[in-house]
Length: 238
Image (cartoon, rainbow, N blue to C red; front, side, top):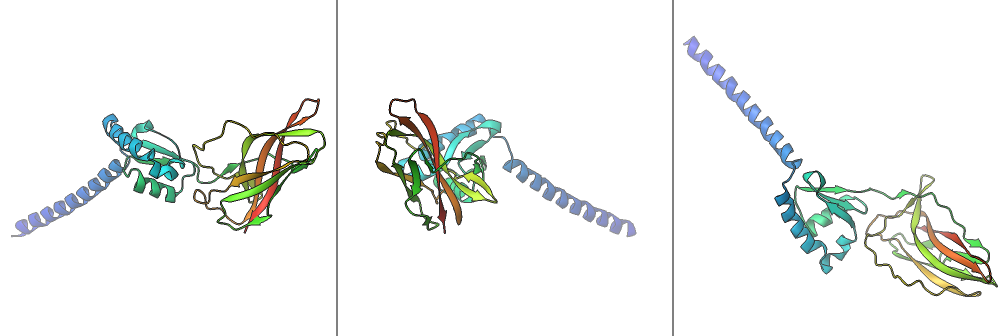
């Protein structure tokens, strides 16, 4: 009788150990599935769906948040302009939802160290208003040529930057923005022009504080060789 009871107790212990082992094994399998490497065929099928949806006109807002994508490491890697949970969620809901997805990219702006001037040689750049509400997308600036003998040609676009802890960071900008090839006519002496900057609050959560708008121009004195100048002006969000 005692032998029979002992046998039953041992069987019960083995059964419990077996249950614990299966639980641990299931957990390991789940972990393997979430980090698994996918075959070329599986990734090809996912890419086919991505092609059809990401480039559809209805999903243009998502397309502008994606810098590129690749299948390195056996996963479908989505490189975002700014890698925030809300952008990951939008991609999964509108484009593709799969455990093969891996989202990459910065989570904030990148350090920006360039300095400019807001008034030199009779050329000045000022904001139309000193302060704008936080949800603002478009900010207007006035470029003035108050010189008597210089032409001002607009050159490269530079980012808008924001201040954080005493340092400046470039504000994330959408990918794949169409840039007009033809530059506008130069500003003649005495002329001014409205320039536009975009904060893209749908892309990055702008906060109250100081912001900078940059613009590169080519200043060409009459009869002399010109030079590049980086103009810069500040405004606030509140």
